[in-house]
Image 1 (spheres, rainbow, N blue to C red):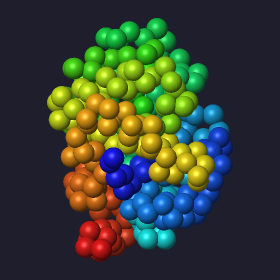
Image 2 (cartoon, rainbow, N blue to C red):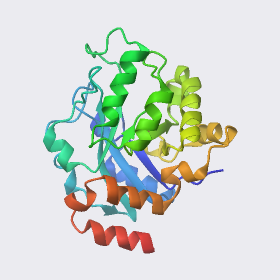
Image 3 (cartoon, rainbow, N blue to C red):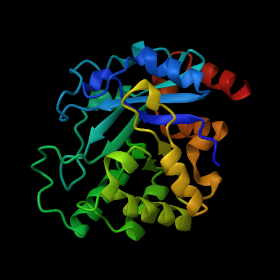
Length: 258
């Protein structure tokens, strides 16, 4: 079985439908032996989302806490078929990690979806330089052309998420999640495996996703968060972490050598 060393899509009580503090999530990650944890609370159009200063102030959180690399992130909502996200420029500049997802909660811009519309949506998101992760994109309602889009995700350094929480919360997505994983395997596109934890006990709860990946013999080398070196290399190359976080280079080097 794969060894996942980082949980890169989680929520704190700042999302208001999640129930643990930053400290509780970090302690849970430490106790479970994780190398890194991304805090990715919901952006502004989600009901109960954090207030306007929340994401721009996340640099107040230490990059290293309880021995865990703590990424200041957000889960942005796709608003329309152009791939627009509910994230402002200042948030884009300041956060370390952005997950882009569709939630279909009162989104007037995503009415009457077709495969063609959703394919163009994700192609546009693929070219958004500030997005790192394509979140739980297996919805049957918003199905897209995997063979067209997933190679583009790879070319644009987007990480395709296999979301373990979907196996419980979005069971209709699972056949498509399997297809997406198979397409990533075929084209050599990296993925991440995430818990989408909404409470501290669910941090590192990846069992359902990992079981599916094992069934299709998904290569460990394509799971970015199964290897410390791969994750650190991605953070250096494709995120703002070195520019935005105090002493980031020294902290990453120390963790690399630990």
